[in-house]
Image (cartoon, rainbow, N blue to C red):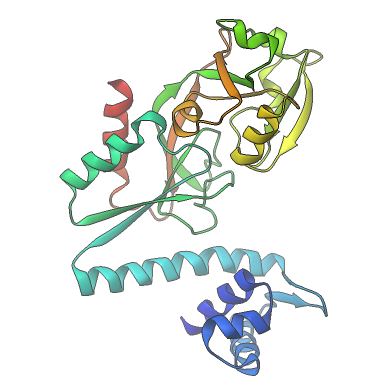
Length: 279
């Protein structure tokens, strides 16, 4: 466990020096601990240069497992010492949308011994693959070889645009019209992809890194963006308005977890979210 914590600290801090400070150890002790882990596993985990520390392919795999093991161990200690469990739900953009607050309140009322923590991670699995959460809420396809999932609801698609855009006076827009504009895409965690349009009829694309970048670019009038209706309730930004994309397919909202290690509370999350979306 000590060696795994050392690996995670080095990666998160970005250097052996900063990891040593975070762990309260000497830099030499951190180096010895990592070397011990590499010897025990028989693989090299990190590449070191004078400027940076990077993961090897094996290191990337070990890091994912290490974060999960450490999280489970921390949870074991927490539950044993306090009598309360912790359930971390990851999301990338907008959690459960307009159902977020009601979900939190009802969960606290029906599962008082299981503390809920929402964790935002802008990745395709909303932090699940990175070990940042136990289950995740996503609005994109998942790798079924690694993860199990359940669709809990559907959300309509909306076009985000600057409040002074000519289309802001309209009640709705259509996909073919949007294809004439520059469309913002979050390739890591967004719910929109070029495949939303037929080949040969796709818009010019611009790329952002997360929802804050997306909203900033939309408000500035640099481009428009299509998003799930949950974004409307979760993020209100001055200078941005939304209009429904009438002919766009709905977005499935999925709860996702590791296939080989299903959390005991995953079915309860699925049941409650399904009920809220149906209502």
